[in-house]
Amino acid sequence: MPGILYHLSFAEEVYRNLIPKSQLNKIDFMSGNLIPDLAVDKKNSHYRKKASLEGFFVPDMERVKKELYKPDDSVKFGMYCHLYLDYYFIEEFLIPEFIWDNQTMKVVNPRNNKEWDFKTFFSHDGMYGSYTEINQLLVRDGHVSLNTVKEIPEIPPKTGIAVFDERREKTWKAELEEYLAQHKQYTGDVFDYNRLCNCIERIAKQFVSEMAK
Image 1 (cartoon, rainbow, N blue to C red):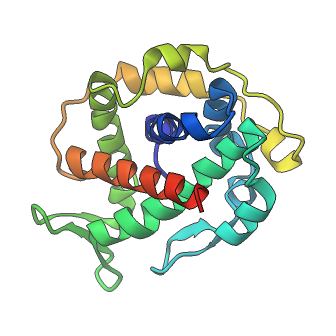
Image 2: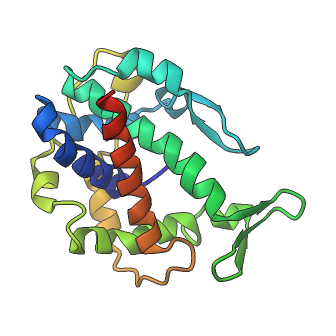
Image 3: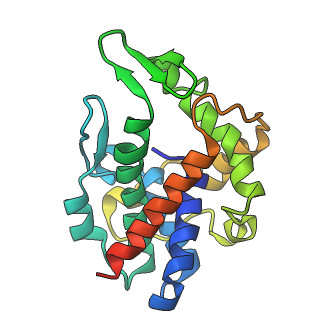
């Protein structure tokens, strides 16, 4: 559910912390972090199961780990990293960050008491618009290196797994260019930038810590 730059920011953070302990190829690893969202069949590319809150779905991490946890394969390990962030972002950030009222079909931000109906929240007038306004800040503050972005191939490598290799026509770079072209002013109405960045850093540290076990 996080956007492209959030996944790349997470991948950068994980890679920085794993460099002394791994032989990851950075570009292959970063590419892998993009692949699950490029699949045509996102239900299966994300190993979906019901989350702790009704209406949400998260990756089934037991299946994900069994099939993609391969630290000696930079691409597949990047794919595992992507799904790991999806799981913990939804369960430990997105769900707790808001009040989800299934009776009124409203989402309330307890930080500022702003509210949306469900449809608006999951649109460019809500959550996805907030991703857009924060993209510029992630680049500005060095959470994502545009030099690294330029090195990642527009067509990531094949994985040998059919569900991941049947991909949509629009490339991730074309999508990212569209997002970065939208210079939307940061409001913090939906996501607080610092809280979101702290979440990404915390989950990255947790990821690296689990690898060390």
